[in-house]
Image (cartoon, rainbow, N blue to C red; front, side):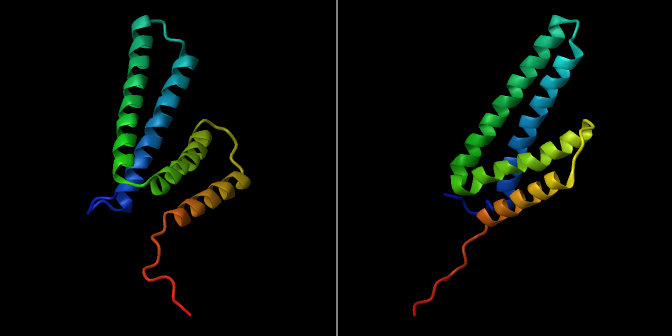
Length: 125
């Protein structure tokens, strides 16, 4: 399913791009709700931007799933967790060690899920 020359780095970049787009849209909508824009044009423009970014995210997912197996690409969505933890800290929310350790554990699990199987891994006898 994976075309030659398309390695794990591209897969991570594609999935991370979709995660970042999702977070950008969430932040845009949060800031928009908090700001209560005075202009309908600004509101409609921000909403159109959010819809457009989600469209780009949809296309990236389509490309990713066409070129990589779900068993490798979908677990990488867990990249969302460290991004959210960083965003939480950015907004001044307290981040404790339990959250950091939890995110590290999730990332280790994702790393294990995306390990290439050993070649000639089993021996008879």
